[in-house]
Length: 589
Ligand code: PEP
Ligand code: MG
Image (tube, rainbow, N blue to C red; front, side, top):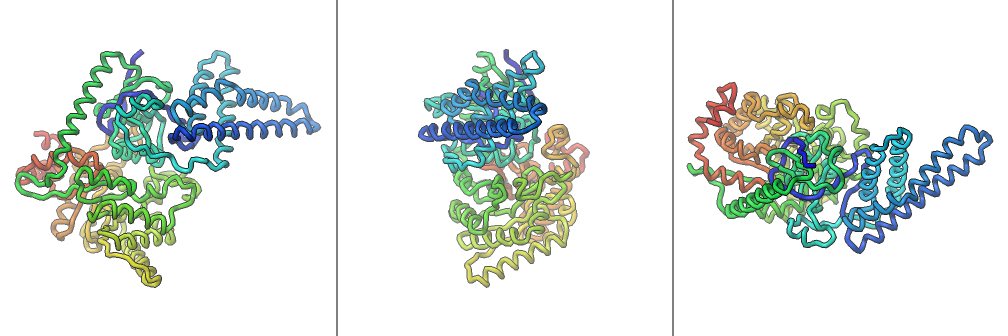
């Protein structure tokens, strides 16, 4: 039976495919596709894990038998028997093999996928005793996962098939239909891993429009819906689904008529995409001759290729924290970072690359071992971004040295996130000097960098003149600026309706930052999601913004807006919007 689930639209377009449910983050497993020649190894890995768990359980049972007080352990022994039975159960083992062979999931992912299938059957059982056995099954699976984690994977890195078209997928005889990912939640690190995969779309139960999970989905340029509440509970593994990334809707088990309608929509957006691609080499200049800089936001050095393919004139934000995530405490050292930054710089072929120092924390946790626990009461207001960097001098200095060294290979700007205090500004600049001093002492080459600050805390926007005294350029992080100005957690879907970029207070802070930049003759960019929102382009141009940084997938659509804009008219409109209690109404007029 067809039904739909409503959530928050975060990445536009239509995806039609089979649902792939990924296990909850509680299980914390890697998800990647294996090549056909690795299938046997994956199955072997799985069998070894199962055998190891069986051996563990048998050992426990034996030690129970050796105990004098057998009475109290009869029940436990019986329970272990149940666990052993489950491990041998064909439904589990055959099912897991199915996911590996047919879908090429890695062993851990296959195991957790099958766990979901079997767990649902337990949920539907009438007998409460049997229903409760689901917990046993979960324990057994967790034990296997633990064993697998300890055994080095023969597949060190997921293969990177790149983004494949639906046609490619249809031609592929193993992954024969597009796959749509459905999850309760996905960490930004998970998303980054999926970036190399073949998913045609994403849906998550939780998340807001500017959560980092949503941001990475947008960067992949595939339809995505977040905040779809119970989607991961009501969608079943392998269900046919449609994601409407414009309306924020997930349609499950669509009827043929609905499928045909969405198929048509999909073809239309492909036509639109082709049309926009013609603007790639057109300079971004408004009708009244104002030049506008359209830059790209990237998460990995390799993303530079898509930036160039849409005619970006540089990278306005390289979120370096993605190099730091999901590393089980082994943070990238100076050399590894240096290599990554050089790759980004060389990849951009002489165009500037703005590397932001690590902005970990809040909804971008590294992992527990490297942060000493992410269970802070209020992580968005806690030790994130520059606060963390200043608290970890060795880590910060190694990142700064890596960035400065990369600057010897091409134009690099260094951007500092979340500054709010003059003391932080001074400390940061003195760290940069120290990093240079260390490189001098080592006799190592480095290049010049322009140093900029993110304006993403209201305090920073209110003291923008002070910032301009210290920095070469500014970049407004509207995602956080909105979060902190309106006091709404950007990852919490229950307050997502309060996310309002047109709120007069937000506009006022942006306007004063842009105006102050002009007054000091320094560049001010916007690198938050607003920069790529075509509904905001006119207003931002009217406020005087001439530098936008966004995901490559948005650049051509924003360029189209720029080409149609007349900033002399928009300036008047933006001024009127700033005076109004409902600026959105003015802009719509
Ligand atoms: C922002 O806050 O707008 C921004 C660009 O930084 P991030 O989204 O990574 O916090
Ligand atoms: Mg930010």
